[in-house]
Length: 140
Image (cartoon, rainbow, N blue to C red; front, side, top):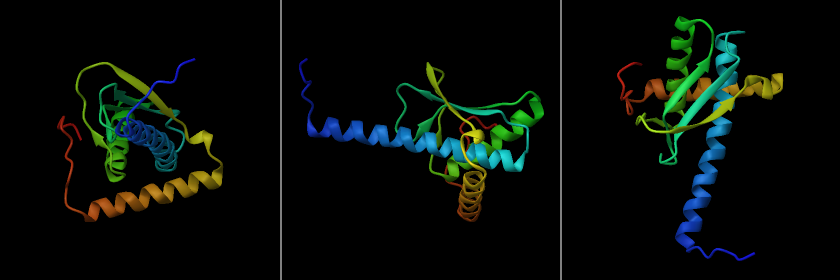
């Protein structure tokens, strides 16, 4: 099998993208844990959709898998705010997406409590900072 030669810049960009993807997966599970504490028993799975062409810090949509529409909208708004507090940008573009799922059940009870406190702290720090990334859809 032949090795594909890539420039150091390309390899560095690939490494950054893979690290961002891993960070997003971790943040998604932490936010799912936080939502599970704030809204016990409501959320089965938290879904994040990303465009194939998005930047490393961008996501397209947040989709909480919840039956009740009002609760789903509330959780979506809160999860989007938590993602922004962790440095993610929500930028829907209307093109193809891929999905990443996060479940609070993938963590131990201790892990869930730790995740809740980390997200709560990030949210409090963001509330004290000026608005930096308003919802581009105007649906927050």
